[in-house]
Image 1 (cartoon, rainbow, N blue to C red):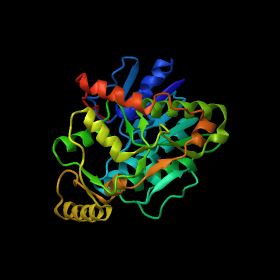
Image 2 (cartoon, rainbow, N blue to C red; image 1 turned 180 degrees about the horizontal axis):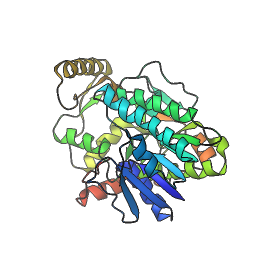
Image 3 (tube, helix red, strand yellow; image 1 turned 135 degrees about the vertical axis):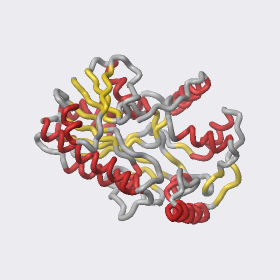
Image 4 (cartoon, one colour; image 1 turned 60 degrees about the vertical axis):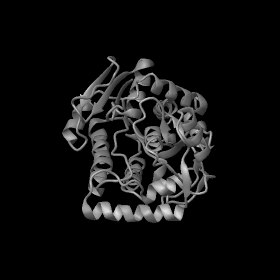
Length: 336
C-alpha cells in the first residue's frame, strides 16, 4: 500500500508513518516546514501547503490511502488561522481526493468536537455535536469532521477517529505543559479533583489509524462514521497527575480553584488577550478550565467492534516509556 500522511513529521503523524513503514507500506509524510524531515530514512518527506490545492494533488499521485492528521491545535489563537488550517485545509484534501481518485481517507479528529463544557461519562458516538464550542480548535475540527463524514461514498471511503489526550515520547503538548507548570509552581488543581478522564498512548492512537484504513479497504460500510479511541483505562485526573509529579520529584498541584472561578478567570483573560492582542496563550481559558475540572471519558466499543482496535500498550507501560524517554534526554519536541 502507498500511503500519504499529512502532518507526517508531527507527534502523532510521524508515529503513524513509522508504523506503516515498519509493516512494509510505502509512506509519504507531508510537512509545512522544509527544515523538517521524518526521522526514518524509509519515509519520504514532502513539503506540502494544504492551502495550495495543486500542491496537494501532486503529492497524491499514486497514493492508495490518505491519513489526514495535519491540523492547527491549541486552545487559543485567531479564529481565521484555525479555520484556514482545519476547515479549508481539509476541504482542499477532500477535493484533491476526488480529482486524484483516492479511495480511502482516515481523518484525525478529536473528542473536543462533542465537548460543551459538561461532564461526558462513558458516552458513545451517538453524542450530538453541541450548539457551541469553547475554543476555535474544537469548533473548526467539528466542522472539518462533518465535511469528511459527508464525503463518504462509493468513490471515496472516509472515517474519522477521535483519539483522546494523546501522550508518549515526543509529546509536545500534554505532559510537558503539566510538568513545566508544576516546576514553575503555577499548577493549581481545578475543581474538586474527582473528575475522570481518558488518555491514549501514542502508539495505540497510531495503530487505530492503521486499523481504520485496513477495514475501510475491506468493507466500505464502516465508512462515514466517527469513532472514539483511547486506552480504555479512565483515570481520576488529579491523583494521576500528582502521582506523575511525585515520580519526577516535583511538588503536587497547588490548592484547588473552583471551576466557576477558573472559568471566569479564563473568560477575563481571553478578553484581555484579544483586546490587547497579546502574544502567546492565556494561562487559563474557559476550555482549559472545563477540561481540567470535568469528566470526559468515552465508550470505545464501536472502534473495537468495527475497526478491530485494541490498545496494545497499557497506560502504565506508556507512562513508563514516556518517563524513560524523558530521562534519557531525548525530550526534544518534533515539529508538525
